[in-house]
Length: 410
Image 1 (tube, helix red, strand yellow):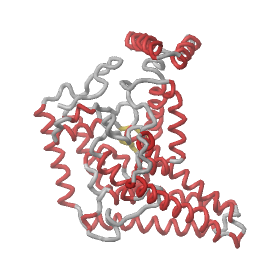
Image 2 (tube, helix red, strand yellow):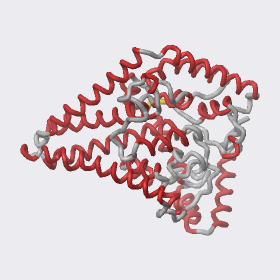
Image 3 (cartoon, one colour):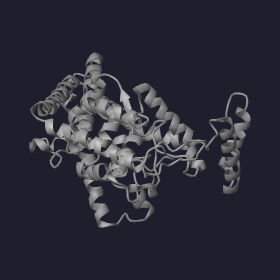
Image 4 (cartoon, one colour):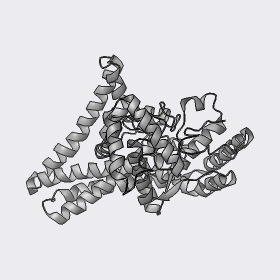
């Protein structure tokens, strides 16, 4: 049976302790049936959907860039920037992410196929497919295996040692959000590990790095040279340049928020490496169920998130057409209820707040936030200062004291 991380941290319990091995395998059987039902019924209606979204995105981008030719006029700047931002979000989320997952390969349309699609992102499609499809979706929320979990720059679980550097985690998370597409490109390159291992001269790495730099140069030339230059005759070079910068940042912040909502809010589980040794298909399914969270909202919200608002369903069935996730979500939720599992879903503002609360909470020593209030804040800050400036022994002793106090107060 899958071993859940955090079984005994601050009074937390194993959320699948009540399930037998037979229960877990039956969950897998029932989920297989849900998946097969979609596969058996996908067809012309689904194909028309993705073609309509692609057509809408392309027309929206073209129209927005045309408006930005006159972006020295403030209303045109606002309208064009808004349209371009939405266009980039659609290209990234509902189209690029899902096409590259192979969700539409069954159509056998060479123009909408995971082997040929390229998107408006710094990371080349082939590199992203390896790190995301092959690694992240295989090792969802397994600490030390799934680099999407914190992107290697954040403490993501209470069992991970706290260090003074963890205090900067909220800042790192925000910077990563602003420059998200470049962070993803560096992540796909495994840049941090390559530098740490001094493998920057490795031919394979150099080849991949060249691909990334070529892609970044192409994207930057399009957004920051060509389109602003086209606006020179109307005196709109700088406003168009600013519009493109703004649209890219909006897309990055939105994409990062959606990813945080799906993987990092309170209530989403993480897993130990050893928990997946000999993992069965049913256990893999259960891990996806507990390691993901949804966003409730309107149909427009679901489209703008690439239907990753149905992150639970996406992690269970990453290759199913995204427009079908809303249809199967009630069936999946009913399965959660049947087996007494928590279906983590909240409106987007609450889910974003929950994710950032977790980012901040884990940037601090275990138990510090839970035991801090207005009255004892000065003493708690003094303890935090001692832990941040002290040696390992000091951090360990004070950390144990905080955890003990948090358990007593729980």
